Length: 187
Image (cartoon, rainbow, N blue to C red; front, side, top):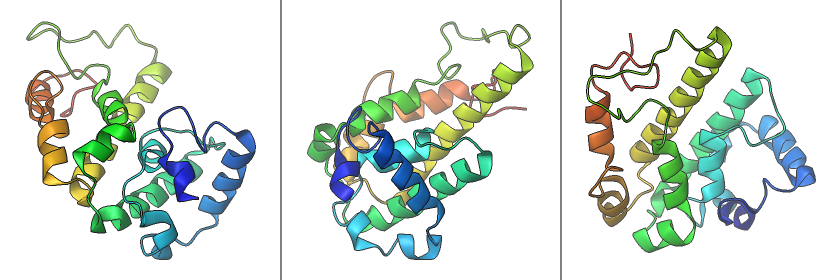
């Protein structure tokens, strides 16, 4: 089962509708207290599938309670993976760098011009609300990943604090004080 979660982006367990349906049922019926201790799920360490479950809605479920339960399940599995921090080479080989960059490429995080905010009054209320929820979900995934202990020091240095525009510290610094709904700090 864990090897299916370890497949790179765009492959593995989420591409097969039957596997997604079985996985959805299994996760929704699982007691979260035992998930972190399940070595069948955590023995390889952090897998791309766990991060996808945490940061996106990839399973056959649409109600917010089920989506929340799936994300809580992924959160618990990721905490259980901390006993084996992932090395930078593994990070790249598994495609976690692509998932990480997709988490950072949020609408409204990086300002193209300092002091210029994206006009929010032009967006319909429903779309604005959905966008805010997706942004918060991604920020939650980033925070959980950083707090989990799943990343080796070299991985944090080379992937999270990398030089350039994808440096997490620079993204957070650029978000401070903005009124944009995609920014880290909002009213």
